[in-house]
Structure formats: structure tokens, C-alpha cells
Length: 494
Image (cartoon, rainbow, N blue to C red; front, top):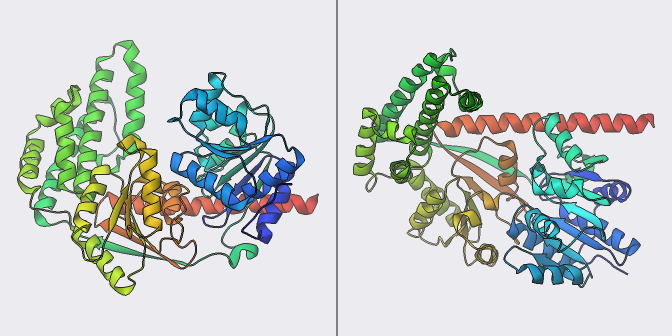
């Protein structure tokens, strides 16, 4: 008989389990409250019902799949638990699949093996979909779910900020029931750790403000030209979403060989590129801006060449070259100061620093090496040239205190559980997504009180993104609450 080990199920986990036993269930639960434990409980139930069946766990990243695999090994008496990755040869994957009871993998790996007739899901009694907010129409998990006939358990802390997004998840994954717990629910109150947040603002030095002014002027000149293609919205109200919608409209008209469509696409592309340069300058620094200009120089697109010939942009490039070696973004020194202070207060603290760009991560690591008592490590995705083996080793080194500060891109946002827990998360830059914001915050305060610091440049994109994600998160919580109340009302009527 299959059994759990090493933990006692909490009341809300057992309550959710009872629903999941009888229907395809979406579980929306705040981070750090044991979604994986619920999946373990349900897996044990299914295997005891169907001892010869398999359990398949999918998650969006290989480090997360590896972590889920270890969770099942640590908390069940199931013997044949395996991790399938694309780095394993296909024939070996087939052999592992045939000899395993529980398999953890990314959906892309599973889909590839199904498409090539190496495996099928006929004998899978439970499909567990972790971080299921990723389940968009063409995502591999959605395709798996559409071709799967048995039980599904979908898990997320952040389903999206509209009813449509939550309904899309339910439709794509054949969900029949939703189990929701929020931080206000009595049965999870005692298990929630407090998280304290604070905002730290820095101001750009005069030389960077001058470059920012030049980039804004160049951008506004291009925005004024949008009137030539019939776009009448005032310049100061135009946002990135407007530009992308306009670009899509022009692309749809290209088949008509319209000169205005070609001109419009190039113009919008120029604005977006200048806007990105401005974002890098204000929130990241001159080295990142310099690298971006070097990339533009290698591009053959007309938009890139036009930008580089702009007199204001030429001045920005010249000054960037001149200043990049001696002028750091003020965030760097402020970050060093924050981390040094935190380590003075608590020498055993573990800190995660989130940054959006790979080159920023490397810059932070190099700068922190000079700070007393800081042992920095970095975690990047495979797209950034880092192997899965290196990712897993980095997480282990952070857990065993070889590193006490981990600087990471989005790879560390989703689901990664650091044993021993990180006490502080510093957002080196802001993200406009409520999902990413929630995921970042979920990396701290899992075992003890946590602290979150938003490090932002005054009057920059950082501030706008901070408030955007905050607004979306509030909206998401309201929608989840509405769904929960509707469900409770239906139960009372039944």
C-alpha cells in the first residue's frame, strides 16, 4: 500500500483533497501553503485505487520538475519516481517511462515523446499540472490535457487578473471544480507567515538625466510622426500596448502592399526600440544600454539603422561610451548598502535578488563580490546558456549556505522552494505582471517572517510597473473572492 511520510496533512489540504478525488480540480492557493502536498495526497489515493497506473507531474521548468520529483521521493514510499528531461536520449526516456510509477517532466518533453510514439497517457491515472496559469491555448500542457481522459489536478497561486483568464485555464484543462483559499480564510491563517514590504527609491545622477532627456525627445519626435498614419491619440497618452496593437494592425495590411503599412511598422518599431533604450538607462544602467546599442548596430532592419542615424541617439551613444566605465546606476550602490546592512543585522540571512536582464545579474554578482561577508551566486535560465545541472547545483549551494545571496532572473520566480527559506527578496527592477510579482514574493516568508524590498528609480518605468502589478494583483484577489463566494452560495443552495 502506498503511503505518505514526513508530514501530517493540514485540514484545508484534506478538504481540498476530497474535492479533487471526485473531479478535475483547479487549486488556487497562496504560495508556501503546500500545493505539492495536496498533489502527493491525491497521487497516493489514485495509486492505491489503481496500483498499476502512473502519475504524471508537469511543470514549466526543469529545476522545478526536479524539485517536485524530490518532494515525491521525500514524502512517499513510492519506489519508482523519475525525472524526464530533454537531455536524456529518447530511447532511454522511453525505458524510464515504462519502468516508472511517478514521472516529473516539462510538458514539452512529454509532448515530444507522445508525438514520436515513444509513450502514451493511457495508463496515467492522474495528471498533475503545476503552475497551471501557463496553460494558454497553444502551450504544451493544454495540448496534453486535451488528449488526456483521466483525472487532472491543476495548481497555481496566481491564475490571472480577469475572469476570462481563469475561465481559459478551466476550459483548456477540462476543469470541473475550483478549490480556492485566500489569506483571509480561517483554516489557513495559522500557516501564513507575515511578509513586510518596503520601497527604496534612488534618483538618477545629472549625467544620466541628460541622456534620458535626449531619448525622450527622440521618442516624442517619432510619436508625432504617427499622425501621418492616422493615429490621433495625444503623444503623452500613448503607451506600449497602443504601439503593439498599432503594429499588429499595420502587419495585417502589409498583404495589400500599402506604403503606409510598411512605413507604420518601421516607425512603431523605432519608437519601441527607443523606449526600450530608455527603460534600460533608467532602470538598469549604462553597461546594459551600451550592450543594447551594440546589438542594434548588428541588425539589418531599417528601423535599427534609422535610429542609429538619429542625431539625438548618436549623442546618447557617444556619452554612453564615455560614461559607462565610470558611472554606475545608483541602484548598484544602494543594493550593496542594503545587503551589507542586512548581513550586519543577521549574518545567517539568505537573500534573493530578482533582476530582469542577464547582464544586470552578472553586473550585480561582480559588484557584490567586493562586499564583506557576501557570497553571491547567480541563477539563469537555459535560454541564457545555463544547463539544468548547473541550475540545480546553484539552488543546492544556496540551500547549504555556500552562497548567501542569490541573484536570479525569472527562472527563480516560479515554484522554486529553497530549503531553509530565504528571508529577504529584493526586486532590483519592477515587473508589470501580477503573476510574476506574486511568484517573486512567494520565494520568501515560507518558514518564517519574510521581507520584500522594491528597489526603484524615481520617475521611471519601475514606478509605473510597480503600481500596474499592484493594481492587477488587487483585481485578481477580488475576482478570486467573487468566484469563492459564488461557489459557497451554490453549496448552500444544493
